[in-house]
Length: 238
Length: 238
Image (cartoon, rainbow over all chains, first blue to last red; front, side):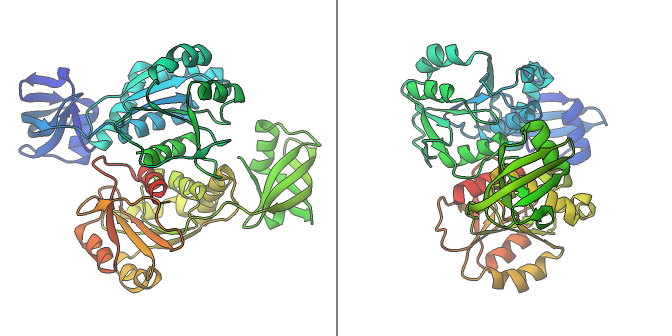
């Protein structure tokens, strides 16, 4: 936790807040803060800055002199369209995307996504939000990503993605008939990046994406897990 | 498991092998192979190719017609010098490094590494080898990385790294006084990349590395976990 993120409900005054739960525990047990110490804080979806610890008990930490003046780091100009990964990977993927500055994540069904994956408790809004917050706290960022769940691939691509991705740089991570993943792309233009499930897209899905202008890009001969391919693709593109 | 890796002890003849344990289970339960099916195999530290399944029982799979003619994917011209990460991260880091083609990993102590980390069972040779194999099976590679454990930072850097890294491109991932991580570096020259522990190197350690010619490089304002920084650094450098 490199940044304590404050939500509206934490504030008890203009520049005062009370923390309980995970954040209080972290300040007490990991950072071992004492009254008088200054800590780094940020307002959810707002600015970052500092606060002074005024009181620490095992379960409650009180902050005052909250000063917020610093903009959070730049977001990636990217919408990530990801075939729903296996639940045990999902939490890590949310964290990684959030840490790396992705602000729009669309989880989509596709042929090789197991139907049971949609039942995971990790897709509950609170569970998603928790992982995204962990990612922001790690990165020192305050801008919570938006997550959409899309259960039908074809109508989404044909009717919605075609419009949303118009005029953007659009890539499908797919190792066949692909060019190498471009590096340092123009960040003035928004980018859509789709990543298929374990085992990849079926040909029909790649064709649908190519029909609406998505270019296949490859990461080379090595086959990476989605959780590794994601940071690698983002690192190369941006 | 995108590649079944065969070790010398698996062979029962020049082109025949018997698999038990994890690989037999995978062929039976995940790939659901039947006698007559062809599967992708590779010889540990050798070539890759195919084999024909001749017999499947729940615990044993027999292979014949093993044909090995394809070279494994290129290795990264890199030695990774990594401050020993927290044990729960270690397995994933071994897998990621192995999947991405790192062939030389030096785990080193440094000031902010907790002493207890060195006691983890995940540092036992068999445990390390297991994670590295999982990484190779994922990537479709056969070349097992070498891992060294180094418990003293200063003498290693001053007496050994100085010689080994001579004439190489040498980088220390460290966000202060650093230039942005270079991209697509010259792969004809070997590279040493050091990554510090959670919380970073102490100034003395960075100075020692800089003294022997390591250039500080940064990944920008966002603070990444080591397990994310590693694929990001490799993706940018190569």
